[in-house]
Image 1 (tube, rainbow, N blue to C red):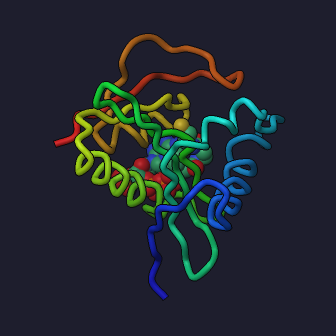
Image 2 (cartoon, rainbow, N blue to C red):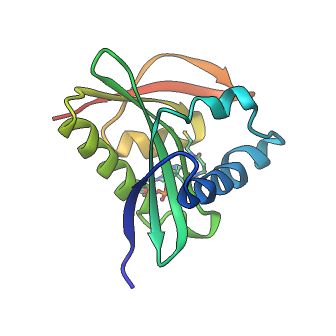
Length: 145
Ligand SMILES: CC(C)(COP(=O)(O)OP(=O)(O)OC[C@H]1O[C@@H](n2cnc3c(N)ncnc32)[C@H](O)[C@@H]1OP(=O)(O)O)[C@@H](O)C(=O)NCCC(=O)NCCS
C-alpha cells in the first residue's frame, strides 16, 4: 500500500500517534518529556503526518504567524525509516500547503545535526547558533515560491 500524507486535528488518533513519535524521536533521546506549556502550542497548529497503512512514519507541525511567515517545527521520522526520503516528502508538502495559504517564508529552529537536511531542501541559516532543549540550533528559512 502506498504512503499517505494526512492533515489532522489536535486530539485526533493521528495526533496521538504523532505525539508518541515526537516523544520517542525528539524528546526521549535528550532525556526530556514534553511540558504542558510546550503541548499548549499544539492546540491551534496544523499537524501533518505521513502514514503507511495506519502506522505513522513521519510528522511535523506548522505554526501560523501573522506576518506571512510559517514556522515548521517538530519534524520527526521514525528511527527505522530515516534517510529514505520521508522527511523531505513531508516537508515539501508542508511548504506547498503554506504557499497555497498565502505564506511567503517557511522558517524553523533546526537542530545543528539536522541543518544539512534543511540545507538540501533550500533553507539558509539566519543568525547565530543558539541553544534550545539543551542542544545547538540555528534559525533556518526558505522563501516559498
Ligand atoms: C532530520 C530528519 C527529519 C530527516 O528526515 P529523513 O527522512 O531522515 O531525511 P530524508 O531521507 O528525507 O533526507 C533528505 C536529504 O537530506 C539528507 N539528510 C537527512 N538527514 C540528514 C542529516 N541529519 N545530516 C545530513 N544529511 C541529512 C539525506 O541524506 C537526503 O539527501 P539526498 O537528497 O542527497 O539523498 C530525520 O532524520 C529525523 O527525524 N531525525 C531525528 C530528529 C531530528 O533531528 N528532527 C529535526 C529536528 S530540527
